[in-house]
Image (cartoon, rainbow, N blue to C red):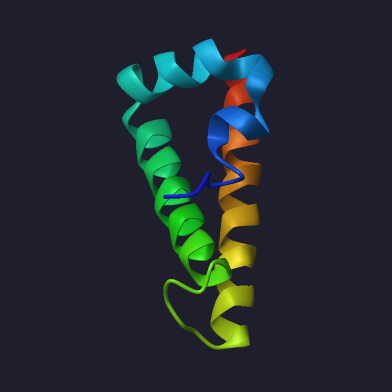
Length: 80
């Protein structure tokens, strides 16, 4: 499979260790990170045409990814 862009560690490279720690110790963070991962993978499959979807669906998923990324950023800032 090709490289999937926008993984959490790539989006927040300066927080790689904190991300790992929070995934193991904070159930809420882990849930949000997993949701981000799932949405990101789905977007990647649509962008690479492995799966088909309407433009509206792709846009909905991108908005969801941004919202999850914002929540992750807030949780990282709070934990830092």
